[in-house]
Image (cartoon, rainbow over the protein chains, first blue to last red):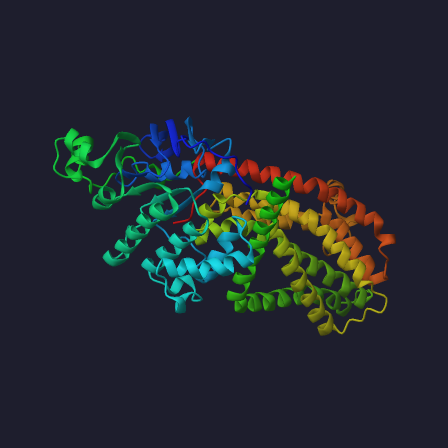
Length: 279
Length: 277
């Protein structure tokens, strides 16, 4: 892979200023209208830091992840990853970032091994490199060796998510975007994934942006916790300070105090990403 | 210089990765491929039988020559269909499988990404086209005493450059219209072939369609392949078909890539670069 220019040590891993993204929503009552999925969001992530973003479905978490991974273009503001602008320097950003999302996202008829070989090529890894590294990485995430050649569609969600973690690890990302990586997993798989995230930080010094529904997960993994509500970042600070600021005993109470709504309440107004998006 | 070489190496490895993935998928779906091949043979037979049908109803034609002419048209149609299908499905398939976001957030240029699909499509399409030609030719007992198959193959490969460029233009359709974009690729394929003399001389077309035939690479591909197989034309004598193919190809690749890149920007702006469901 092409070498990037050395990044000064004090460069922020993520720097977003007034980041804005809108989608057009078609509504029978109100016709077409623009809805803000992200409204002037500013945040910084220091190198090696883990920041969790809490928010309901449609709060804008996935939009933030997709903007930082260059899959969306912002409508306003700016964002950079290790100093590279996500719009102007898309290719440089893509070399530094990888992602694990709630859906494992693989070619279902292909095996874990085949999916990983294919994904690694896009990052410039040769056959000899992948032949050596893929079995080692699958072993490290606890994937059983005898199931490496089975089609992905035969594997459980937990198994598939392990392969997704292996895919992210394979490319040695310096910024790892985790979009609800443990949603829908059984308790054991959830703990394994969380343990792996800790290992990623300890061994690889990766910076992690974790978008999650799981309050305990956010509190145990992240140095700072953000509350994203209706596209607005209402708070971003260590969990203890967050609880203190909102005079709450738990993060759930703090979330309620910040947003005026319970964490599990369904949000049907701002689910911009899931709406019918029109040109 | 070293950085450029390293970048090129990385890009070519990425291109090989797309080919590798399509090899895996073809292996996994091999029985479907056999089924589709049987369908293509049946479809080709229905077209090629037309020559015998004309004679049976009193028409005065050279049946073997007409049969071969129709067979070449059907084979080029099938080949073009494979190229368009693979390129159009570069996006549509990944959207369906859910891998589209991972592919588009990888540090690989779109030229190499689409190039990988194109290289595989050409290799796979050539194998299918040659097999189709052999099976149907054996079925009708056709003999090719003077045929120059090497020249025909060279024409098909040169034409593939243009087909690839046009395929990139159609590949953008599922990007901007996830629901119906893939089907629009078939419309483009049909439009291309109707003006290119796939089963008839372009001279029978209305004037404005004959003008379109002049800018269609399929016109020159069909003309050159027919001349090589029916009359044993040499590569040198086919230059009048080869140079337009090279010119159209040189224009189609950058135009196709530009259109795809514009489509990608549109999809990123409107949030369409994501999995289905």
